[in-house]
Amino acid sequence: MQELFSSLKEQFISTFIVEDRWLQLVEGLGTTLLITFFALLIGLVVGSLIAIIRSTYEMNVKGRKAGRVSDYIIKVLNVICNIYLTIIRGTPVVVQLMIMYFIIFASSRNGVFAAILSFGINSGAYVAEIIRSGIMSIDKGQFEASRSLGFDYKRTMALIILPQALKNVLPALGNEFIVLLKETSVAGYVAVQDLTYIGNLIRSRTYEAFFPLITVAVIYLVLVLIFTFLLGKLERRLRNSDH
Amino acid sequence: MTTDDVLIKVEGLEKSFDGVGVLKGIDTEIRKGDVIVIIGASGSGKSTFLRCLNLLEVPTGGRILFEGTDITDPKVDINLHRRKMGMVFQQFNLFPHLSIMQNLVLGPIKLLNQSREEAKANALKLLERVGLADRADDFPNQLSGGQKQRVAIVRALAMNPDVLLFDEPTSALDPEMVGEVLEVMKALAKEGMTMAVVTHEMGFAREVGTKVVFIDDGVIAEENTPDEFFNNPQNPRLKDFLSKVL
Image 1 (tube, rainbow over the protein chains, first blue to last red):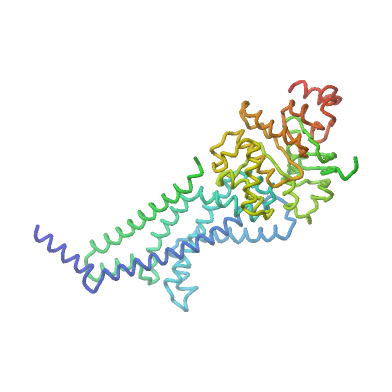
Image 2 (image 1 turned 135 degrees about the horizontal axis):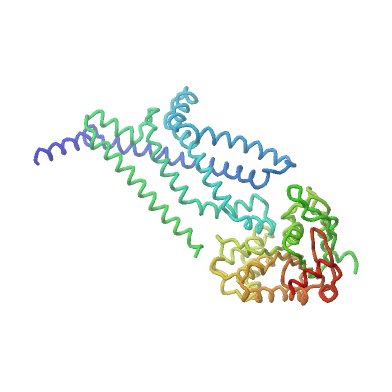
């Protein structure tokens, strides 16, 4: 018993205390959060844009004779969006990350920036489909009521459709963000020292796998739990109008 | 009557969906203060006709002159004209994410540049008229169907429109709620509001209508004063229709 304790204590010390390794873990966590946060922002912006383009195409242009210039613009944008969605959803995120780092950013080798960009672009594709499904789920009568008051298409989207659509897809969006947070764990492929990378680094330095890896796992779990809790709160607040 | 009184003039209006003609040349006019009641069997095109009037359905032929402007002209900014054409839907279509008050002031504030106070005061006055002033802070889903439809009418009125379009306003209501909505519509008609109403309520047509229009197979088969229309119908299809619904 005593032996077990002293060996655990030793492992603990070599994992966290020696060379201030706990500090490295904190830094790794910081990097993970940094990448997740900015990738999330990019994903939301890119995803919303694509969702609006695609649903505008589906509702207003598809199946009709293109008459105005704006119809052609939407048509072209829709094709571009479809190509983007096909490529991003059809290839693994690690491969996208490595292409971004080793090919597109070959000259700069800024790993964190490449990671933010590729996770953001990747997430955008999934966010786009989630938000689009939200927009398409809103009753057509909502569009008509808004248009009949005299609102143009843009303001109808901003004031009437998107607020309702986002509320409806909040659980799905939350899920996507959780996936994104965990997906950033492959950032180590391009030498980014994120949480997972640091955990693995400590394992290789101390020849002890238990503490570093379990610690990393617990940190991810706690992050997800916190996020799920906050999301649940937000959902309940938004649901107040649905008595 | 001079032509100045003509609010909406419809000339040879046609609408087809994927090549299937729904409206096949409709000519009529709506004068200030008119209450036009449009009836017809389901699928006859009566709702489509009404929805063409504010271009929710874009006509495939003909012209619609609203206050002298051809609104079917693509160069016309339809959004400006829609402000003056209120619409009430069968399914109410209130905005569920906004409170009743927010539903009512959204248009006046964002489109008519009214101040929030002004819009609120006006909305409250209108709500009082339909007996719902105490529900201003509730959300649409807390109201009954009849209450929702009265709010929807107020939402259209809050824009201070020149004409109100009603697309089967009582068809989605439980029978005991039809009366409260019709009462509001009757009161509006009495005050001289110009209205175009698609409905199955023959009592309303008879009592309030200034003109009743029977649409059959995409054309106006008969239009007349309510008295003549119901007591002395000419068109055989109309006779048949009336014998089924009266």
